[in-house]
Amino acid sequence: MCLTRLPGWQGALDRFLTAHRERRFQYGIWDCCLFACDAIEVMTGVDVAAQFRGRYHSRTEALRAIRGYAGEASVRAVAERVTEAHAMPQVDILQARRGDVVLIRRPRDYSLGIVALNGTEVVTVTPQGLQRIALSNAVCGWQV
Image (cartoon, rainbow, N blue to C red; front, side, top):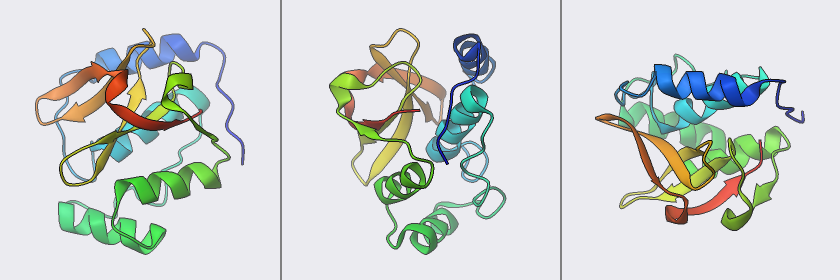
């Protein structure tokens, strides 16, 4: 299934990010994976995380769900599997556009973010709310 951005996706994404800017990280509700998938749904109308919703509420349960789906307990592995299933081509980080999903290297694993509407930053979820970091911190991306 190929995703197509809806008319007015930029405004919808802007409203989504504004509405959730102070929402804090919570496994199974508002973590980096579900944040990215929620943003994709806002832009395309397709919930690419339907099979994960309500299935985990802790880090251990999240890793178990990821391992069951992707064969290994890695955010990168689940991102690669979901993006492949939805025909989202991988792009070099220098070619990532506004609204694309990107992978950010973290000390333990990876996290997901969305290229901000300014095209130079990535928005991701933290315990303090949404955070913007330089796009140069991302290692790869997928086109939405």
